[in-house]
Length: 189
Image 1 (tube, helix red, strand yellow):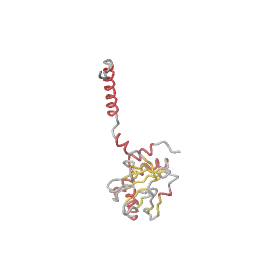
Image 2 (cartoon, one colour):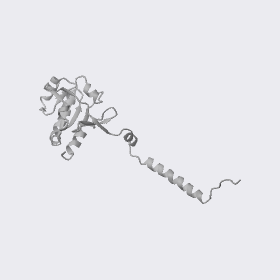
Image 3 (cartoon, helix red, strand yellow):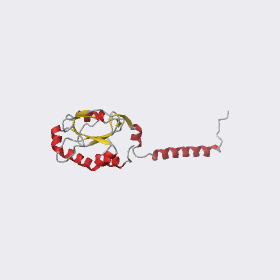
Image 4 (cartoon, helix red, strand yellow):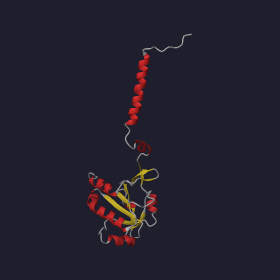
């Protein structure tokens, strides 16, 4: 009984194949961009944005539904402190013309009372931007903003969809960066 023998000429070819396969696996794993695993695990999904209705600074009812189908809406959750609201409004004032050209409507939500918003806005002259009351932060919670320490910015497209991450909408990023990006886009048709 003769044991199965491998032709000696095949040994270098088999070794070269193993080396090449090992190098390919190493090269593919080494060339993954930063955050690759996170991007693969949580792909961007667009789903309907949570709807809301609440009072603005003039005690008028604001409904998100009113803008859907016609405009994109920038939804901004701001802590209920005067300095935070005024800072967001001043930043919006700088970009208001660009946002209007892009047909982006704005909704700023804060846990402060309507009369507080009215008082804060008197000196700013911002009647065009609705500052809305989210008294118990219930709307913020539906949007995944559980602790309103920093400003959270979301973009709702014309269809009424927002980018989601898991069970809640995904914030677009820092307000100043989002405003700069939106106002530098080519005008939407």
